[in-house]
Length: 403
Image (cartoon, rainbow, N blue to C red):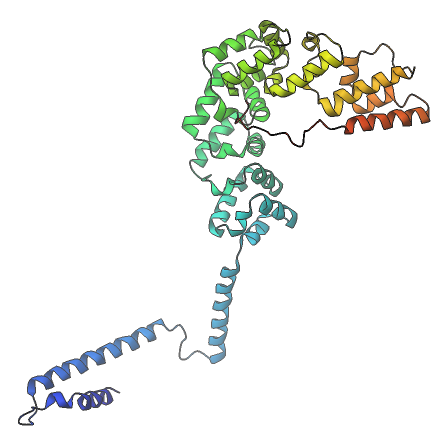
């Protein structure tokens, strides 16, 4: 092959090898031709060597064995290419229904990086997170797998286990608030926990606080005004209600607290009475101003009760006006208008509102004759289905996190 290449080059460059005047061979041009042809031959030889080196089939190997080797390598490549997030989740233990819920909550999971998804799932396995827990986590935090949950993970887990007491409690806390895996350990988590410990919170108090108020860690902020509010509730640190009072006030903005207190003052309650009520029922601070206004208006205008009655019966503010308070009040009035008596006499309206649904129907409906009971039940169902006026066209103004 090398001789053939040389002959082709000589034939091609013959005009250059001859002198235009004498026709003699140019020695310098001939030497250049030889060096060029030798370089080409070296290149051909090196390329042949490369091809031979890259070959993975032995010459002495049988043809069928080499064919099987090629097929097996193709199968491996094909298997790697077809691996998808769906198969990763299925191999991790998720069933089809759970995978569907995960993709519905976070459609980007269908295009997730497989290696990163496998890595993050492997971090959740030692915590005891199950497939059903994973659905709750992604439903609560759709971008959970897009976050860097691996950062200082071991230190974070060890700290939470020390604070909460066990890995099982940590698993439940993560399900309630998956962002516990994302908050900054030194700037957010440790300062908040240490502050509540300084208030006298025990380990059980911290567990109850994290379960009842999942966002207590990132939203906790205390100042002199908030500490004064806690004192004005009259709840001591030995009381079981202290952890709830402190946690709710700790995560609520000062402006929000002042707005809600002023709203109750409009109905004639003093500031001291309001703080005493918040000490008995701290969840009142989480109710919206609109809900408190509507319930108080119904209590005073329709039920003809004094505004101070909510101090003794906080349920009048907590209950749902459309589905519970108003229908029950209307039914009780209907019973007395028909000249009927309930199963238990001398029952106050506040007691009737706090009864379970089964108990309430037994006392006011089922104790009468069948035809009367049917009429009362139909009236009660219609009262429960009455919707608020213009509720569909109401415009909601988002002011951020309410507490």
